[in-house]
Image (cartoon, rainbow, N blue to C red; front, side, top):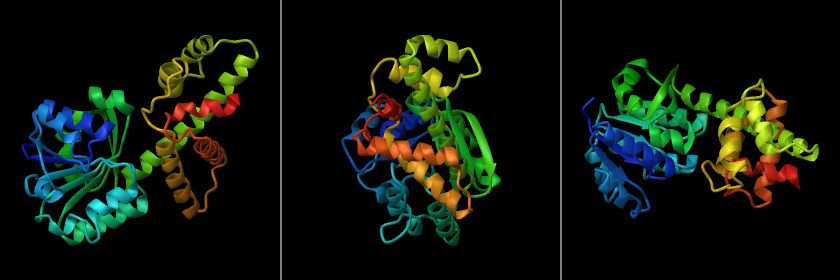
Length: 289
């Protein structure tokens, strides 16, 4: 695909993903509400837009990577939304982690204006974004996915086409739900082990090479808990947002996942205790109290 990509949202993930696209040879124009974030992207080879309107006029594919569903809604639909201003045939790809209901509303709006769309949230953290090894969970028309496949291959190594519109968002929410339970369980067990005289590093080594191994063991515990450094890779509040969206989805389908409900409870406690801005692995502090 030789089309110019417009990238909206240059947070920690978005900036890294944009740079991967530039390195892969794509022409990229970027925009962020915080204009200073665009300076570094300009040095990396991106063109910058002073407004979203300028960006959409100069790109055929528009990607968003935004922190909250409210931000995504504001960009796409309503009074200030861009969909109504896009030329027919352009493509929008929302790579944020949003709500299913909002995602389907955006699809509906896009369809009414003959705009193509994919929902494609990612997993893999800052390292995955930096190295281009993200997992990308994609929902939407298969034909549009095939058209955009080279874009995804520039930023991820595990490209999962999940089917119909909204399936990408649903898959990502469920992934983060499983992760939240794992993070709580590991934190609880590490604290238990400490009380029994075991060292965290010993436990992590044993778990990593045994049936207790997981992403939480190999990445989060090693790089955050063991290092006692909770600078956010993926913050407690961002994970709590995803947990809440997933639990709302479960409730709409008359499901009450018990373990997931416990994870939500503990991350709410973490937020209440001022850990919202720290990495989500700081949940261990709740169990150490």
